[in-house]
Image 1 (spheres, rainbow over the protein chains, first blue to last red):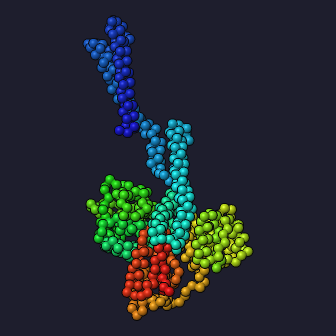
Image 2 (image 1 turned 90 degrees about the vertical axis):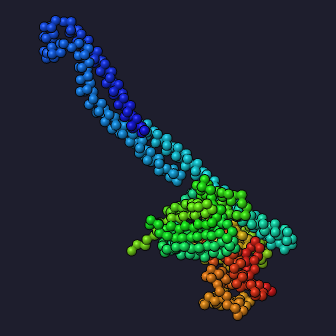
Image 3 (image 1 turned 45 degrees about the vertical axis):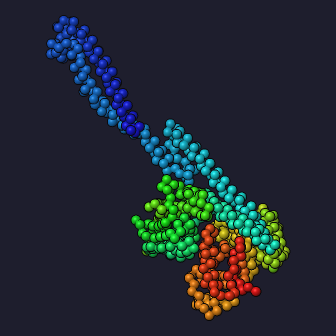
Length: 374
Length: 224
């Protein structure tokens, strides 16, 4: 039940109660008056009562009379008062609660990127204005925390790059040393591989931290989406071949999207790489590009081990690797899907990961189609 | 060949110096932008390896000032930020190449070498390494008398490797030039393509031409 309905009911209740109190009071008053008059002589009463109303009801007891009288009064004056009161109450609560509705609508629009935009204040200094002020202060504090976290990640990834550069460089210098035994060389190469993986993670983190801070400027231009997909399909065939995985390109309708060519290619490669990596031996990957409700819908599905439904909402989380987290045979940095999600969102699109059947995974990317001006 | 390295991080500067020296370059090192700017004005260097983040005058500012002074020394920019926008800003300011940190040493050497040969680039239309021929006009490849069928991507890869014959090509360099990616795809795309290309140009032929340098990259050359 809304506050408004509840207030109106309360209001009506109070009105009825006060009417009741008023009725009892009136009844007693009239009763007292009538009993008093009853004892007087009829001629006296007649002179005191020019309307002669009492004369007509002389045969009735004062109690009955008073009850009738009160009932009539309550009915004639009280009922319209209640109706009026209810309507008035309904209208009043609406007026009183309108700023709450406005505040609710404004607060609903708050997300982590517009925390620094204050909610509009009425300036009247009333309770709701004060509440808005408190909301704004809270949002400002949250914004501060978010900014600090973002800056921390950004600085951390920058700070990591210098020691990483040195480590990679020195390991490579070591590898150039001709006097290394094959054993030592193997160890150095394995170290270098891990360092490079670390470097990729740091790269991914930097990219996401910058995206969070809104520091990445995308070049937007009309891009032939189907061509990019065909191109990526050619790479996918090559990537999948060593694993004996078959790649198929289904429908691939010609269409343009407006966006950053490099980032869109990165998106496709990320998704393809995932579809090949999280697959079973001799599995399948299927890609399609179709129009769907005025949008360009790209899907890539694979016969992977699948993802349990309860984990689906978390697949775009950073460093989320599901069951593969403990699978050392699958190499990855755990940021691929987060980066993919950022790229799609930055292009005003949506990305979802579904598990249409056990052991199957399908990623669906929807982007607005670009229509060249005639 | 004389190279100036302007890098404030002492250890980084030190391994760059060592690596370039092993490759036969004469290397000078400066640790601040101002020192670097003075050095390029007083000494003729063939290549400048310039870090962007420097104390005092930063790398981009050194670069702009150099170009204002009409100093055309080829510049390889290094940056810990590694962002597309910065890469574009660097190239616009007059840099000849850009390498984000952390980089692979082989990559750095390959790029410095590429800069020394920028003017002497192989412009021939028929490229040759031993008995491997690639005609860039007809896009036909032959090993001896046998014709080799190449896909579009394999062709671009082979052309790039042949134009850089005898030089080590880093993974990122190949990704940039052959795939036109400006990011590290984090996949083994290059390795897989190299393997396929090797099957086409080397399998059944002697000598082997396409070599992997472990932990560094690839090189196409005739063994001597």
